[in-house]
Image (cartoon, rainbow, N blue to C red):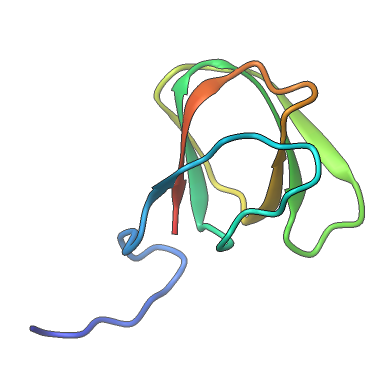
Length: 84
């Protein structure tokens, strides 16, 4: 098997389902988040000191954000997949 460098634009090697939680960090910082069913998504960037809310994110969107947390409070989107 050929190994390729893991870069921000490389394909996801280990995608996983995200269950929003108000205090628990994501197990691995992803390159992006896939939003299955649209709504609001509250995240903390991996190097940020405050949360940010992406509002009215359409279904099927990739949020290009390296998030450390996806908060339950304020997140109305579902079917979120971390592209790690």
